[in-house]
Image (cartoon, rainbow over all chains, first blue to last red; front, side, top):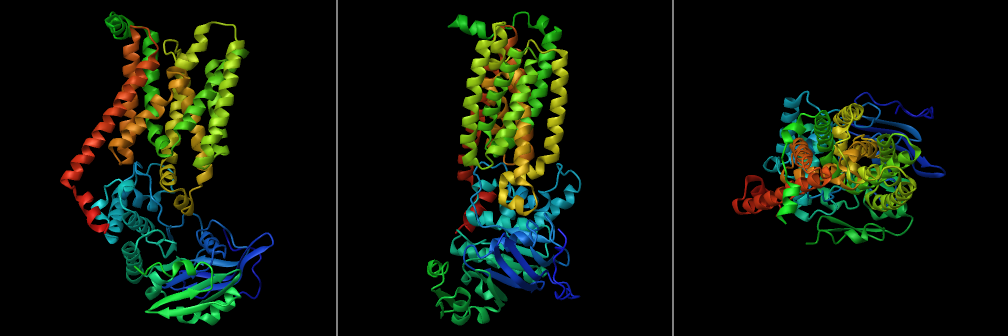
Length: 281
Length: 298
């Protein structure tokens, strides 16, 4: 998945210091429909970038591009200086929480180990000792050592999500790609998961791209916001982007952003009204 | 009653029988089938493909019946039917919900066709029943070679695809995000399952294939969550059912499938009992992980 051939001549060359994620003039179109165009974004190591936007704005598409599952229609993308590719160890992926089958014959350590080499062929007899050490370390980092040998299907949703974070981090990725990882988790588990992610990016300089509907659970951690609406987008600090003016312009309708006790309440934009009560418990 | 039991369990002259070449062939065939069936069973169970196996076996019956009518090799026809069925199931319904109805549709059509084909066949009746309930006394050296080659192919294929299969069974979306080609893998696995069915049908019969391809796996995942241990246990269970069944059916001369299915079922029930007993013991004792899980879930 090399750089697409249609790179425009005026695209600036990539900077020398390698950002964890670099997008230059990135465009994705499906037929006539362009999801976004001219997207320039550098994510520095250790930076926390939240990707916000209503459904269908191309958040999932961006995730697929970074995972190497979908090529850009135009422009350039680099993960730690290299083009994205399927199963790249430079990227870790945390999906939204989904209950695992109760009878799944898989222990906590097996789930984490799949993040290391689950996409490889073969049974994997070589390097078992090193593999075990890495899996143990990843389990310890998320506080999952106690249920390393427990059947994953019988753990709580929060415990399963911790294991998924460990699964994403076990390969030592440069970028942690989180796709709605807090959805359907209760408040305390949301806090645990965000804390784990925050600790990791501070300790290891892992860049975080956090796709979400709801910014409030991660608001204190966010360095920058990428807000996508119907092909328009804005990148900046939460203070710059999360304002009534900017969001009204993006949504092309009146949107009010209120700050209530350190939380952002967005009124008038779809996908926000339904979430603003979420953390009131 | 005692007459029935005596008829079911008889070992008179078993020593002589065991010295016979055809009996030895039969036992080798059972041992080979046990290895492949056990190796695949936990993955089949994890991926929720019991119905697909059943469908493949019915289509193996159709293929065998067609071969009987055409005068070609029955086992080859059965194999073709099962593999085609596996491929069709894999392609038709990749998602669980669609898959069940797709299998139901293809299965009922295939079974109907098979009944018709069999009715048109005017040869020996025992050939007809062999496909449905299985027969091991007629395993030839040639059959044995075919079985050995197929088993080797299956075991090698599973060894190569093991981790991606496990990954996509756990969570297809994450596996796809990590670069596993989930849809292609699903089709490939369905074909492998078809191949397994094809070698199992002549031995245990189309209607009882599930007892060696599902039950050992379902029993194993009841008592362990370690995927490697589950595979080893499933192989042991499948061997116990097949070799035990073959041994018990020898002197009475009754179909092996009934014995195999019963042993398999008893193993499964035992595993359920063990798992229930263990779970209640664990709830009382609070083993480390259960206790930790509880503390953290708050």
